Image (cartoon, rainbow, N blue to C red; front, side, top):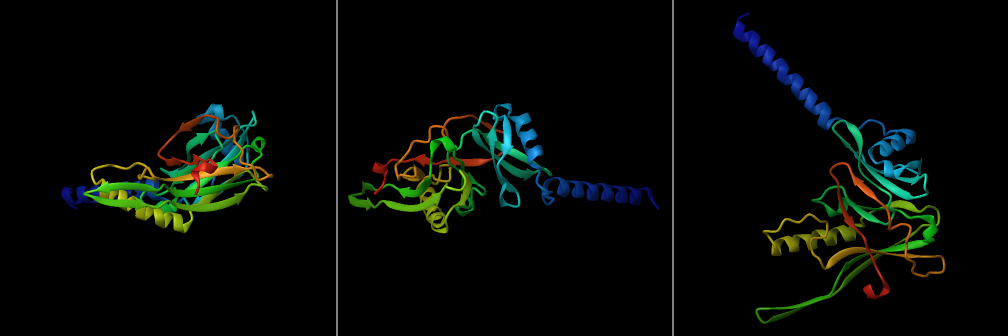
Length: 246
């Protein structure tokens, strides 16, 4: 066998090993999710302020994204956001704030988004209503008057059994956002949008109610700290008042 052939064989072997390692590192299927004890240990190592005492649940959003609510030693109710990347499970975001947040799984597909929360029990929230809203508008362009009516979609959820949870964005909300975002990008082709809601008149909001159907302010759920530990795309959910609704 000639020296050149040996070199070709060796080079082919190196390429195959490299391809295998790249696949193993970046594209391998997720392993079993860590135990509650392992989750708490890693969260506390990465973000000591979380001071996790109890893992409440592990909620699987898809094969590579998991929402993990927890309670701290100081009775703060927080959340951790885990993704499978580079051959391991990683908490990409940890916070001790429990009010709702939108987690965008695929930035190009609004329907892949989830609203997640972990409401503090001292806030006495019995149920909450989520809203997808587009504010009414009016403008004149080239002498043409255009009126834009308000759009308001609602979803109510009970918190009687537990104060944490997830809501996959309803199909009609996702479809509406897809159309609204396409229009916003067409009107502003040179602008890079980093939000699920590039149109400022379109937003997701929420209203928390107690058992007497009274609107309450979730003081214990809106205060806290957070730590970003990787790539994650989120959007705030606006706390609304009655005057914000039709």
